[in-house]
Length: 137
Image (cartoon, one colour):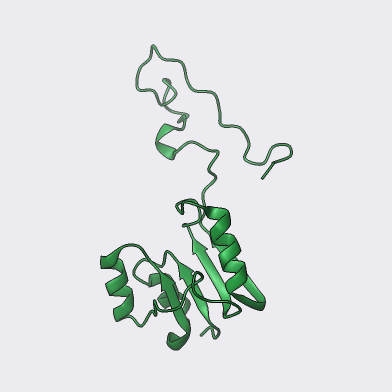
């Protein structure tokens, strides 16, 4: 069992915090889906405190496949940092490479059309490496 205040940003129904075995009284979440939020609340996830309302409160802030969906990702990272206690951690989990194409558009070795579905179309160029060269933020 994990102990410490945690905020799961985009917590959905709270399945991640359940699977981790996080101590129930210290689980906080943020979720835009009212349906998912009701389920999470029934599991003991608290929505009254989150990264937008707290300073120096959380031991861990988790972005589990959500950072690429928020409208201002760097603002959310700053809010998470502000909400952390000294020595706290921000975890980014299951965030995809935004420079790559979705799996449905990738060229399959067994598909001579390169995923285009048409033998007359040329295969797409391979996606560029995610971190090639120096990246400007």
